[in-house]
Amino acid sequence: MNPASLAASRTAPVTGVVAATGFLAAYLAVSPVSGALADRPLPLPDAPPAETIAYYVANPLAVGSTAVLQVVSIACFAVFVAGLATALRAAGAAWLPPVGHVSAAAMVISSAMSGVLLAIASSTSDATADVLRQASFYAGGVANVALLGVFVLGTALTLSRERLFGGGTRWFGLIAGTLAALSVISLAFYYASVLLPVGRLLCMIWTIVAAVVILRRVRAETR
Image (cartoon, rainbow, N blue to C red; front, side, top):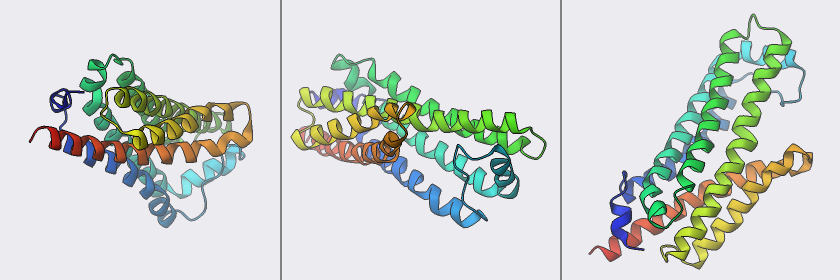
């Protein structure tokens, strides 16, 4: 892999490190920030719609901050994907950046659905609240995570084949990406839902590792 193909990307390698770090940091901030602002835990997706409505009505700041942090997090991921787009296309994997961007779009949709529910919570019906809550959950959950896993898995394989990544980064990406991609099983098997947070977090950490490896590689080969 010629490092010039990375340097020619729309974002510089150092920006990739910042973006990957923001991807994880904003996500990790969701729980403590929303927890500090909420008066109760967010009801689970299968809770009665009335409980969800009551939570949204009573905790607009917690809901709003969660949506904003999720958008910030996924925007950072989109920047990371854009930074690898040129290298992935040069390696014959032009299909991977769109997968990453669709994953990002799924999280934006999830946050938007949460925002819509927040705006109408005081006057909406149980049925409408349930549809919006479920749409937000599946878009920001299995759709986002499974596609994130496909992107990480494909990128780890492609860029290791081009000798940009070493064995450690490749295997970490394979494991993280596979677990995240397999989270789609949670649609049919409830206990597989553990793959959602595990796969998501591992993929987030992998993006930081990958970004640092790329930065060091480009700096070493362009001196």
